[in-house]
Image (cartoon, rainbow, N blue to C red; front, side):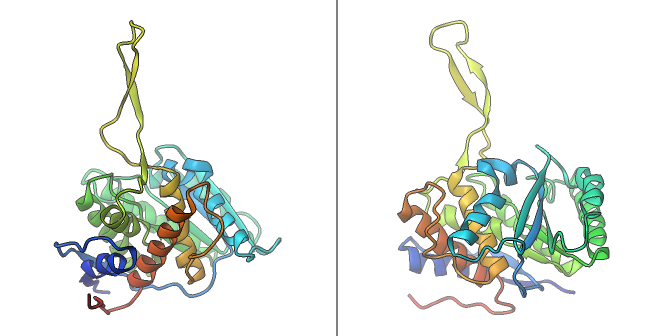
Length: 285
């Protein structure tokens, strides 16, 4: 099915109006998803890497949002996480086969998250697509719902964020599966609420190690989520999987309540806007 391209600027403006930011001058196109959320997903297995397991795991943040809204039912809800640090999608296939052998009813959906650059790097993107197709086939064979978790561009690299968003959505459309727009939310948040840092630095090494002024050095690229980043990811997942806004949820993951509220609002604005099929709405200022 042909992908529909919509104006990404609409999402930024929508968030601008609600968060009192500054409208963006550039217009960026985003592929529109063919599949939109339908039923609530109560039993999900997350397959991924450090992007998902940082900060005690996105599944725990999502579970806390659900519990804080009094929606968690013992025996009815289950969220688990299976990750490999630095893992690429093809490295999860064997484990996925084992996890899918669990008794019927263990899962409703399997949420797939790839390596940061994997879907857009010329050296890995073909292997990524092949591995996702294989995983989706295995999941559908068990009559479960495959879902792609769109990752984000590194801090300060908006073009990477757009490329990833379109790579995930294009593949989701080809396979007729749902994609959750976490990467879009990161892109919009960086533009609209830059005072909230969604990333943490990775330690590279040590300098002045022979003196009493030893200092840590850090990798240039900021890619792993801060606590706020993981919280935003969980809010987008909640918005997509439950088709409702997390705004007002009292679980804030230890963040300042005002910051948590901004991330809650943004997650719903982005998610609901992303799934509006073939529509482009830019509110009048």
